[in-house]
Length: 192
Image (tube, rainbow, N blue to C red; front, side):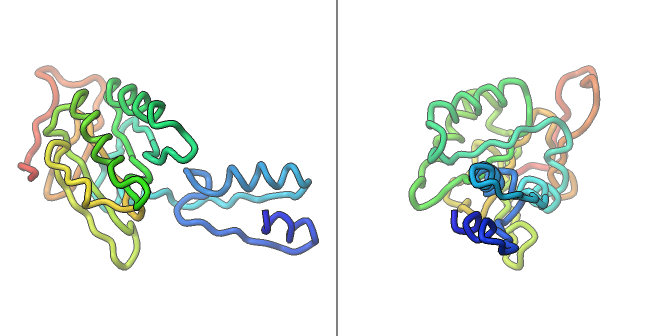
């Protein structure tokens, strides 16, 4: 509101958000608010936490994937559960934004428990915190061993598929169409 008011008064204004402003960030509310005031807006794309985290991990989002938020501030938790089931059910990798916060300390645990009903507990999961930042950490685990307290609001949680393996310490979702005979590829390393 304040940025749009200043822009409406003739100022050149920049509203900065981390990651990509169009992915669970400020672009949508800014464009909508500005349109109501007749203020032009230029959205400058950034790098999503999903892309930055995937690069740090290896290539876990190399195939089809979905970007979902675990924040229920604007979306009911029941809708988030439906999205998680639907995406996991069709074999897509998942980038989980807003996995945990002080106000939502149990959402990642709830999401993990739901996903274990759909996916193999051995599915590789990567938690990247502060992607591309000076405090970046990359933790590779499995869905069944995921410790939800390892994530924060500065984390992106990347959930693999039946085609995701750990190779040379990096997480990779193999790209091949169709899947080779004999089922899903086997992981080349054990993840704990």
